[in-house]
Image (tube, rainbow, N blue to C red; front, side, top):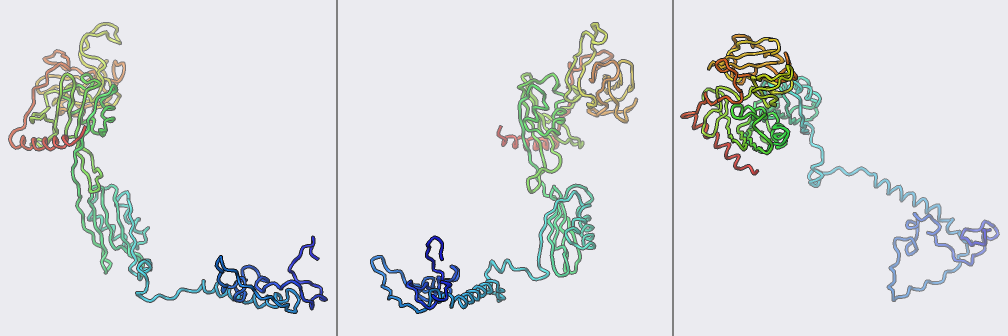
Length: 491
């Protein structure tokens, strides 16, 4: 008995009622099945059938169905009698659908594949290729890289050997584009391109007989001139130049260019302007290769202005020249130390150690221990040893008879000894604090005819040379090339 007086369509299980007709119309056969199977077993025209009658138009009444006659069978009898065959048919239909979906695709006929499908199909054995791009620390890593890519060891060794012949013995990073052929007989080299940063390298191939050959590829470099300008700040020329974008390795070259014209420790101040042009080699990708080279330097202060060009003289030496081709080289450099701060000038002063007024017979350049010291001019070493309060002292006698003194050095450079010849600008020692010294610095003196003179006040114009003839014409071409590059630079 249904709970709560509910009426259900379920058949009665009372045997006495089986032969009595129900007043209620029997449920359609399809409704006796689960929802998923109704469309399969419902007869045409019944709900759930795929052959449903068309829906009448809105203004058309649906046709009246003829009254059903009682079947004479108990309610639900039709559902019980058809459920077995219907379920079997549904299972068979579902099985057939699954089998159809899982069927193996038919073998395509050559030429019948669409273009995209044909492109995705595997290549015939022996013709598959793979391209790899590698960056190696050096040629020594080439063999292991090839073996790791699947190339047989003998072939990898042969390729490494031939590449080394074409590439040369120079060390350094190399880049490789490796094309491999993968076939039934294994993995082999098809082509290999190995290059250095400057574009030089080797092209390696393997022929049908398996022979490896390599040919050298020349470097493809061009030169560019780049310009940087700026204004000195309150800290130092170094910080000013770096802030303006100058490569820090070029700063010592800039300082040396003005060694005869400026003392950068005392003759420049915030607001002074500078401009540099440097040349760099670039490869085909536009990457800089090798070290840049300073080719132009300009410095302007309220007192004076200098513009210099770097040029190789007929003697094969690079030097700095003004716009007319006159060398900056003079008998003496203004300062023997790069970028040092002047801590004490020439003249009478109160001695910080002896505590009385005394002539300070030179100029003190304060700088960290180890800062290079350079010979002010061509000279012969007259003395180089420890000497009491002077610490490590070196005395140079120059060709014009003048003498220069270098006190408190930390060390002398190898080869420095009495009688040795040194060239102007040659490194002769390093700043220290030996002897009677209050801190690391160089005490520098200039003696003329035995008398101490102010190193910053001496005239250094003697000894200048000017280019002539073909050398002057070549200089003008180099100068004009730099000036054209500078003109294109927008400040």
